Image (cartoon, rainbow, N blue to C red):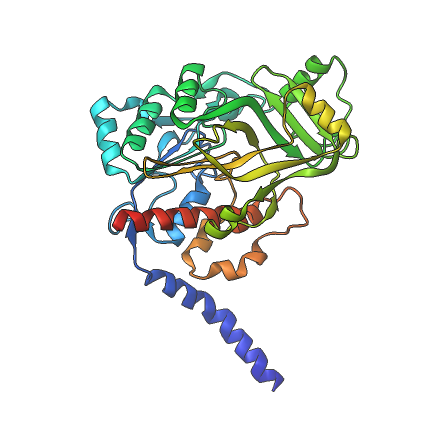
Length: 386
């Protein structure tokens, strides 16, 4: 009996992936033309938009009736090449007529990242912990024009963290804010599992220097916490126990998000995010960040006008236009694109992450980003075909 059980398990292990792959292969394709903008593509693996491509591939959304999206090719922005060479193929090269044609051809637009590429990141001789001159980046006037055209045509618009943050010029930022009634406070933030600079070498030198300039004292932190930085180079640090009852930021979703976007009620988020102020007469906040600050932490934030709760997912979904802003670097996630070729892979998601690791982000992909974006695309595609 035991031998039969082991034999059965062996057969399942061998043939289940094949069955899952075959089920994916026979799933009908759906043409959905997505204009992807990624100005922060350091490698051809495309970590800044790989999560989006994972979902497009898994759900069988294609750029033509038969051709799938290519991570390293099918986007607008910065294209890395060998030996520190690169090509820039962004919307900046488009004429007015070409932008109009793109807005007609594309079903939706997704700005995954406009932060861009800096000299010290691209030219390897530089110190990546320091700031340097920009090679390419920022939301351009042509990007704004495409957004305006897509909005006029009632196409789906998705943007996320840093679309209008540094290095976007204030004029273009103001146009975006007026267009979508969503204002950036100037603050961005990130969780660090260890703020001890003698141990954690990933803490940028500019962050340490700007903290010391802001507070006129040496960097004193040794525990986990959250670093807030604004466009004036001011830095605020909240540390575990001293300022925070729990150092990890969390995203809490309302009933609508749970029911219509399949989001969990609460989930940790350990990466970059920004603090936005939406016009609530126009937009809905369906998920929000919560910072677990104690009284000392709340007082520190209050000094700089930083709230303890703020939007994570802002939505405008009406007959005039459809718009989403994700206030985190949601599409940046080191998921394995190979797993997208297996139908039903979500049943095994627990094998892909360890939630006990505070810094891991794959659970965020599987529990938050994937269900949310899948629901958004499915709902939008159904309306396109009605």
